[in-house]
Amino acid sequence: MSLPRIAIDAMGGDEGVRVMVSGAALARRRHEQFKFLLVGDEARIKAALDNHPNMRGASEILHCDDVVAGDEKPTAALRRAKTTSMGLAIAAVKSGDCGAAVSGGNTGALMAMSKLALRTMPGIDRPALAGLMPTLGDDDVVMLDLGANTECDARNLVQFAVMGAAYSRIVTGKSAPSVRLLNIGTEEIKGTDRLQEAAAMLRAASGLSLDFQGFIEADKINRGLVDVVVTDGFSGNIALKAIEGSARFVTDLLKTAFRSSIRSKFGFLVSRPATELLRHHLDPNNHNGGVFLGLNGVVVKSHGSANVNGVANAVNVTARLLEESLTERILADLAELGEARLRDNGSTAK
Image 1 (cartoon, rainbow, N blue to C red):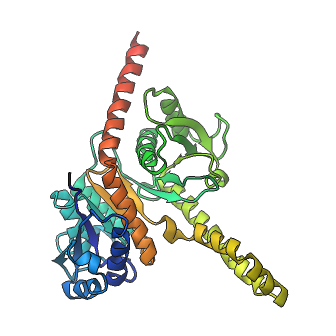
Image 2: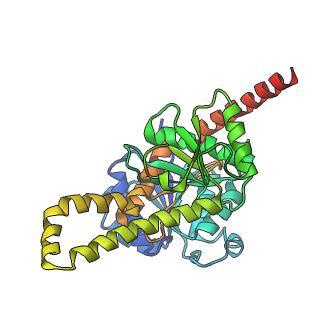
Image 3: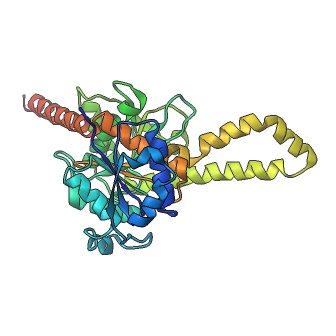
């Protein structure tokens, strides 16, 4: 069975066409079976393809010179969905011409367009933005929501847990990934009413392909203790930026320390293999690719500042989600969640 194409918003991101096309070309070395729809300025895309022979026969160009600005309000961008590279990439997923879309453009506009065009799948009230973050363990941790929904109720958090676990199963290969809710403490009595209610719902739900383990505090997110961390978009976005800021702080602090004296510079040369490993592990480009979960189609958000390797990682994530049928997995899990609720309601009635 042939795999669906991936639509690339070639105009999205800080550097636009060159980085987006080069990143897709790099990703195709690992996923040679995929083909692409490159949406954007045709002349610039053709010029970029001249440097990547492996993409020429695998790519179709859809010309578009209208771009969503990075600071454009989502409501304004929505009015231009039919004329912008971002909107046309999403429309290709809606029509079935492509199986997924990748963009490095305006996050708010991408979410608004995706939600309006693709709609949420049955059983999902709100889509969530999920991302992968490095840990001290063998696997990255899936965290959601990272900013799509600033306010969430308990039902939303339970749905996020189901979707995050489906994503984690693809990433880790585990049949029942561990899931925890982000909280101010791990004790069962801690947290808001909605967190308490969500925890109770997850503990009561049987038959789900996840292992709910209660709460986790923010300082433990990257310790490798859990596969999926669930929270609302407001707290998730703050936690994400705090973690990314801490990573930059550590790397900048190391640079300053190693430049402070001749002895420190010599120490840097001796420890360079270790510092390079640290730099690679903390580089956000190596974990690039946020996924809008809960839509009737796959949409992946690349960092606007991502380099070629970062875009390649976002496209690699997209390809893997299509290969592993993420949407179908989530639908199956939601069906199981619905059956679990019916069983629980039946038990309560008795």
